[in-house]
Image (cartoon, rainbow, N blue to C red; front, side, top):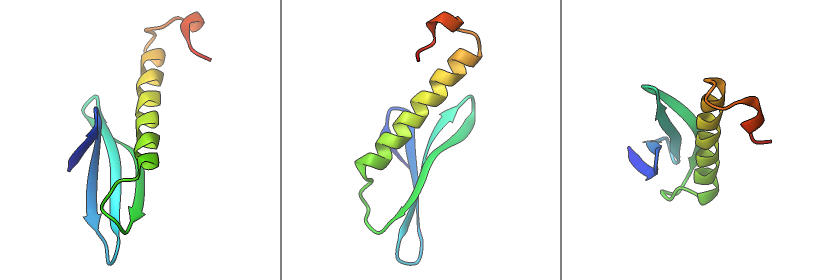
Length: 77
């Protein structure tokens, strides 16, 4: 397991001739899978990392809004 970004972790497993990756975050004691993909090389593509970061931020933003910490007028459009 490797930390790729503040709050985003990666788990890798070797398949036959490829590497399977899962990018996830921990939220309220639960593992939330943000993105998964299969590659042949060891380097994590920046586009895949950026997608996981975007999804993590959306998760946190949605959770804050749904818990009533913002009024309807303060939600971003």
